[in-house]
Amino acid sequence: MAGHSHFSPANVEEHFEFTSEGKKRVIYAFIAGVVALVLGIYLLSKGEAGGHEVANAGHEAVKAGHEAASEHLSGGAISHQPAAEEHYDWTNRIWANVWLNAVFFTGIAIIGMFFVSLQYLTKSGWSSVMKRVPEAFPKFLYITLPILLLVFFFKGDAIFHWMHHGVTEVGNENYDKIIAGKSGYLNKTFFIARLVGFFALWIGLWTVLRKKSLEEDLIGSTDLFNQMVRISTAFIVVFGASSSMFAWDWVMSIDTHWFSTMFGWYMFSSWHVTGLAVITLTILLLKDKGYMAYVNENHLHDLGKLMFAFSIFWTYVWFEQFLLIYYANMPEEIIYFLERWEGHNKIYKTSEILMVFLNFFFPFLVLMTRDAKRTRIFLKIAAFFIIVGHYIDFYQMIMPGVLGGHAGYGLVEFGMVTVFASAFIYIVSDELTKASLIAKNHPFLPEAVHHDI
Amino acid sequence: MSSTTNYILGVYDDEDEVLHAVSEVKSKGIKIEDVFTPFPIHGLDRAVGHERTRLPIAAFMFGVLGLACTLSLISYTMVFDWPMIIGGKDFFALPNWIPVSFEGTVLFTAFGLVITFCISNNLYPGNQPDLLDIRITDDKFVMAINVDKNKKVSADDIKKALKDSGAIEVNVK
Image 1: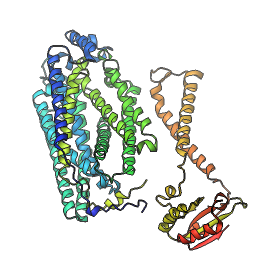
Image 2 (image 1 turned 30 degrees about the vertical axis):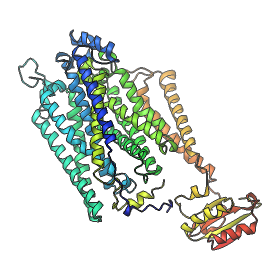
Image 3 (image 1 turned 180 degrees about the horizontal axis):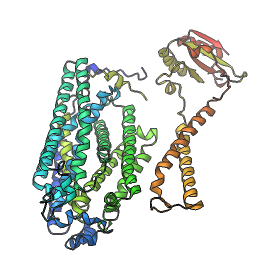
């Protein structure tokens, strides 16, 4: 009614073309990432810690690493975090990076499914013009599943304290009563069962949803729509449980002694806002290439609002977790934050401050006004820095527990994230070519095309 | 509306018609004062050319005011007037204060906005609204044109333009 557009969805089909030039660019980025990674690993093996920023801190840490663990951890209270120190091996940094990126990109991929499911569950109209973009993301789960499994199988003990030899064995010199008490949940078999089981559900439900969605393009029927609503409902239920459990399994259990009841949704909120930023950025890049002209500033405004709102949600969850622990000030809990704030020669302090700035203050101020949410360049900048900020967030969750004082930002980190990001771009672009960019028989499409806020 | 103002009112009985009429009347160089409708119509403000509300700016300022007031209250009571140690924290324990500051910010913003909105729209108890046409509260759509602000177009031309754009009646008030 408001728009006088003559766009008629029924006869429009738009196919994304992943040009050979585009492919080449992504592959070059991938190769650059691999080169950086190999160089970084070479430097690491030489003991140079492979990176500009770590040149000082890292070098010091490597030297200090041979000394007693308690010496270079301030506060002294960190004495029961010796895992990374005793077993440190320079290759751990590689596995920690693989794990970090696998977890981070698994999150982005599954948030694509979560976003689509949520839209179906709430029977939202506005998002139906863009649903093909998030719908393509979960394809990347096929890449991260084997990576997660392989790292867990072969290098799990480099990452997880609870997988160290003998920690649950009475009488062993490594015996740890606290970890032994958690072994009913934290054991290899159950871990693998959860990982594989939930991934099977995720990928299965996504495959069915995707199939129905493509079928809808051909025949178009409200029956299919209703079926998709039911699949989405099932997925939301599964995701509610699995996102929490994966947060405990993949990230929280690295610091095995420590636990937080808010961790499940802390990690979910981080995943979610990153996913929203990636969806927005993908749509904006597609628009720059001339696709998706029917996605107008009203839809972008809504995406901007979601990024804004969920950045605040992340801050809320992150801060509440911190506040409760800070207020109660119990040694076994506060150690988590002490380690990140002043432990390990304060190497994590800058990241911690930068992360809160990038994940809260920056999107909060940049996306506050209506005009900013309707302007592509502001959205792009905000989305990009939200992604960077949440990468750092995951870095802060994983690295201190795995590497202790040996972490840093260097070629290994840069190379690894480039490799994963370019693989993600390649897989998602390829998946986008397999369907029309507009779901032309979606029952709410006319509503979405005339979306006006 | 003061009685010295002259208004020409076009009465419409369909929201699509009034929406199209707005652009049609405007294309003849006539400035529209306002359009009154019983319910919101998408795109009407943009068609009439209203400026966007400045309420968000007020909201931001009330928020900042609320934050400042709450932080001052807590720091005065807990740090300066009667210093208290709670949970072994410093006197100036900012993280503890964030939830309260947040609540204060929200409270000031909400109340401030409602009060500002009511004042700027003359909404207060006992106010008798000065309606141009009582039927805008029911099922009619009224386009009001201020004659004094349309010196270049004669009143007759305005009336004709309204009629041409589909008004079911044209009144002068």
